[in-house]
Image (cartoon, rainbow, N blue to C red; front, side, top):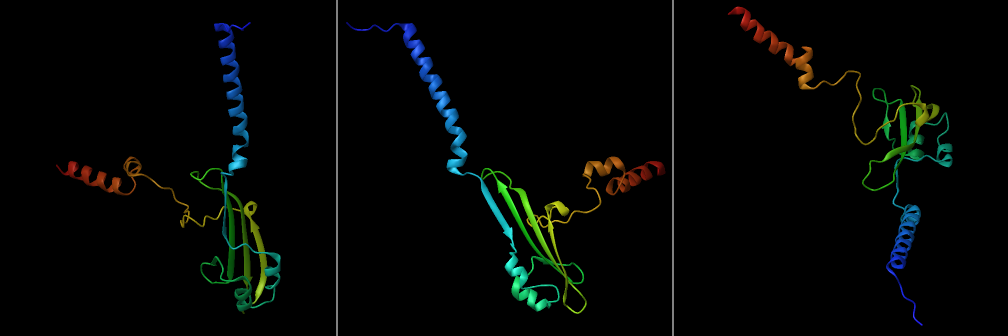
Length: 172
Protein backbone atom coordinates (compact mmCIF):
# COMPACT_ATOMS: atom_id res chain seq x y z
CA UNK A 1 0.00 0.00 0.00
CA UNK A 2 1.41 3.41 -0.94
CA UNK A 3 0.96 6.60 1.01
CA UNK A 4 -0.67 9.46 -0.76
CA UNK A 5 0.53 13.00 -0.20
CA UNK A 6 -2.03 15.72 -0.24
CA UNK A 7 -1.50 19.39 -0.96
CA UNK A 8 -1.90 20.25 2.71
CA UNK A 9 0.87 17.79 3.65
CA UNK A 10 3.22 19.29 1.06
CA UNK A 11 2.42 22.81 2.21
CA UNK A 12 3.19 21.87 5.81
CA UNK A 13 6.44 20.17 4.76
CA UNK A 14 7.49 23.24 2.75
CA UNK A 15 6.79 25.50 5.75
CA UNK A 16 8.83 23.26 8.05
CA UNK A 17 11.78 23.19 5.61
CA UNK A 18 11.61 26.97 5.17
CA UNK A 19 11.50 27.55 8.97
CA UNK A 20 14.47 25.21 9.56
CA UNK A 21 16.46 26.96 6.81
CA UNK A 22 15.77 30.42 8.30
CA UNK A 23 16.70 29.26 11.82
CA UNK A 24 19.92 27.62 10.59
CA UNK A 25 20.92 30.76 8.65
CA UNK A 26 20.18 33.00 11.63
CA UNK A 27 22.09 30.85 14.10
CA UNK A 28 25.07 30.44 11.78
CA UNK A 29 25.26 34.24 11.48
CA UNK A 30 25.87 34.50 15.23
CA UNK A 31 29.19 32.69 14.96
CA UNK A 32 30.30 34.09 11.60
CA UNK A 33 32.12 37.11 13.09
CA UNK A 34 34.12 34.86 15.42
CA UNK A 35 34.90 32.27 12.75
CA UNK A 36 35.82 34.73 9.99
CA UNK A 37 37.36 37.26 12.42
CA UNK A 38 36.45 40.30 10.34
CA UNK A 39 37.44 42.78 13.05
CA UNK A 40 40.81 44.45 12.71
CA UNK A 41 43.08 45.83 15.44
CA UNK A 42 45.55 48.53 14.43
CA UNK A 43 48.49 49.35 16.70
CA UNK A 44 50.31 52.59 15.96
CA UNK A 45 53.27 54.28 17.52
CA UNK A 46 55.83 53.22 20.10
CA UNK A 47 54.71 50.68 22.70
CA UNK A 48 56.84 51.15 25.83
CA UNK A 49 57.46 48.09 27.98
CA UNK A 50 58.69 48.20 31.58
CA UNK A 51 62.09 46.66 30.81
CA UNK A 52 62.93 49.35 28.27
CA UNK A 53 61.56 52.06 30.55
CA UNK A 54 63.90 50.87 33.32
CA UNK A 55 66.86 51.70 31.04
CA UNK A 56 65.94 55.42 31.17
CA UNK A 57 65.25 56.26 34.83
CA UNK A 58 65.06 59.75 36.34
CA UNK A 59 68.56 61.22 36.32
CA UNK A 60 69.67 59.68 33.00
CA UNK A 61 70.93 61.82 30.14
CA UNK A 62 69.15 62.76 26.93
CA UNK A 63 71.50 60.50 24.95
CA UNK A 64 70.74 57.53 27.21
CA UNK A 65 67.01 58.10 26.66
CA UNK A 66 67.51 58.21 22.89
CA UNK A 67 69.59 55.02 22.96
CA UNK A 68 67.18 53.05 25.14
CA UNK A 69 63.77 54.33 23.96
CA UNK A 70 64.69 55.47 20.44
CA UNK A 71 63.57 58.56 18.60
CA UNK A 72 60.45 60.09 20.20
CA UNK A 73 57.15 60.30 18.37
CA UNK A 74 57.25 64.07 18.88
CA UNK A 75 58.99 66.65 21.06
CA UNK A 76 57.86 69.79 22.82
CA UNK A 77 57.02 72.54 20.37
CA UNK A 78 59.38 75.27 21.52
CA UNK A 79 62.16 74.12 23.78
CA UNK A 80 62.71 70.36 23.09
CA UNK A 81 62.69 69.75 26.84
CA UNK A 82 60.04 67.02 26.60
CA UNK A 83 60.05 63.79 24.55
CA UNK A 84 56.67 62.19 23.83
CA UNK A 85 56.40 58.49 22.96
CA UNK A 86 52.86 57.92 21.70
CA UNK A 87 51.05 54.66 21.00
CA UNK A 88 47.46 54.09 19.98
CA UNK A 89 45.28 51.06 19.55
CA UNK A 90 42.35 51.31 17.16
CA UNK A 91 39.74 48.72 16.24
CA UNK A 92 37.26 48.44 13.43
CA UNK A 93 34.67 45.67 13.15
CA UNK A 94 34.80 45.54 9.33
CA UNK A 95 37.59 46.58 6.96
CA UNK A 96 35.65 49.40 5.32
CA UNK A 97 34.59 51.11 8.58
CA UNK A 98 36.44 53.97 10.25
CA UNK A 99 38.73 52.73 13.06
CA UNK A 100 37.63 53.62 16.59
CA UNK A 101 40.25 54.65 19.16
CA UNK A 102 40.24 52.06 21.96
CA UNK A 103 43.44 52.80 23.89
CA UNK A 104 46.08 55.52 23.90
CA UNK A 105 49.29 55.71 25.86
CA UNK A 106 51.69 58.65 26.00
CA UNK A 107 55.02 58.49 27.80
CA UNK A 108 56.37 61.98 28.47
CA UNK A 109 60.04 62.28 29.40
CA UNK A 110 60.79 65.72 30.91
CA UNK A 111 64.33 67.10 30.88
CA UNK A 112 65.83 69.89 32.97
CA UNK A 113 68.08 72.62 31.57
CA UNK A 114 71.16 70.34 31.78
CA UNK A 115 69.55 67.65 29.58
CA UNK A 116 68.94 65.22 32.47
CA UNK A 117 65.61 63.41 32.95
CA UNK A 118 63.71 65.19 35.72
CA UNK A 119 60.35 63.40 35.46
CA UNK A 120 58.65 60.52 33.65
CA UNK A 121 54.89 60.77 33.12
CA UNK A 122 52.48 58.27 31.63
CA UNK A 123 49.21 59.59 30.20
CA UNK A 124 46.30 57.52 28.97
CA UNK A 125 43.08 58.22 27.11
CA UNK A 126 41.34 59.11 30.37
CA UNK A 127 43.85 61.88 31.14
CA UNK A 128 42.87 64.23 28.36
CA UNK A 129 41.99 64.78 24.77
CA UNK A 130 42.60 62.32 21.98
CA UNK A 131 45.87 62.97 20.17
CA UNK A 132 45.24 62.31 16.50
CA UNK A 133 48.41 61.08 14.77
CA UNK A 134 46.74 60.55 11.41
CA UNK A 135 45.08 63.80 10.36
CA UNK A 136 48.04 66.08 11.17
CA UNK A 137 45.69 68.96 11.94
CA UNK A 138 45.73 71.25 14.94
CA UNK A 139 42.38 72.29 16.41
CA UNK A 140 42.03 76.03 16.95
CA UNK A 141 39.89 78.07 19.29
CA UNK A 142 38.07 79.96 16.51
CA UNK A 143 35.07 78.85 14.56
CA UNK A 144 34.90 78.01 10.89
CA UNK A 145 32.38 79.88 8.80
CA UNK A 146 31.16 79.15 5.33
CA UNK A 147 31.11 81.81 2.61
CA UNK A 148 27.35 82.21 3.00
CA UNK A 149 27.75 82.50 6.78
CA UNK A 150 30.31 85.25 6.32
CA UNK A 151 27.96 87.12 4.01
CA UNK A 152 25.06 86.85 6.44
CA UNK A 153 27.00 87.89 9.55
CA UNK A 154 28.82 90.76 7.88
CA UNK A 155 32.33 89.49 8.68
CA UNK A 156 35.22 89.36 6.25
CA UNK A 157 34.42 89.53 2.54
CA UNK A 158 30.72 90.13 3.01
CA UNK A 159 31.27 93.23 5.12
CA UNK A 160 33.62 94.84 2.61
CA UNK A 161 31.31 93.92 -0.28
CA UNK A 162 28.31 95.40 1.52
CA UNK A 163 30.20 98.63 2.23
CA UNK A 164 31.29 98.95 -1.39
CA UNK A 165 27.78 98.29 -2.70
CA UNK A 166 26.06 100.54 -0.16
CA UNK A 167 28.77 103.17 -0.50
CA UNK A 168 28.19 103.34 -4.26
CA UNK A 169 24.41 103.51 -3.73
CA UNK A 170 24.75 106.40 -1.26
CA UNK A 171 27.00 108.37 -3.65
CA UNK A 172 24.44 108.23 -6.50
